[in-house]
View: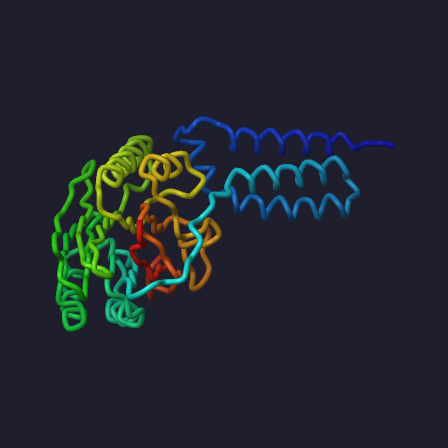
Length: 305
């Protein structure tokens, strides 16, 4: 049986590129390319159908194997939901996109979640004023750190804070708060990690995630981490955060949040992690008018040790 040399070249290139992406060290350039690996699996599926139509059996075998490698490499188990016992907390997360002018529509979307705690990111002075004015009636407690560089951040709560503070982590403001929940105390970390748009920013983001891992592991309180971590589940920095802190992701790798066009998005950048002592009963993604992110809404609660 004659084999077209182009078929063998395609098979060799596909397998080589897949193996390099899956098993390369955690360096800047491989990290950037790996963020889209799940999209690549769908592209490979289309290529495999084309190979089947052309009767390129080597090509069909290589694209199928490459797809399997990608799916295995990008599979990070998420925490399973459990039945909620008693009253917990509904937490929402909104990256509003700083240049976004649809402020009243975003505020309506936040109110529609019926959340008790709301994490808001990319908050500048204009967003801070609009959010405080629009949410103050329903969320009398807030901690807002506006900035003009897309890393301003805010936390709005229907419940009083027992503690709340701004943490400066590698040049970015994160919020740490403690709130009562089901006769217990829950610690919340609201985070917007640095976008890895350069080698220096990649290193800063990884340093932030390492520091977050220590902050969670060193606390005796059950901890919720919510925010735009600017990383995907299969990034080594994200895996190290989960392992080092003992936290588990609630948002599965299949729940893509950026860049968003309506209900569609490409990669999962927004995350909710729960440390031991926390569980959740539901998770949903929601639209954020005018933003390039999708929002998160989850019902979480402390569990008995």
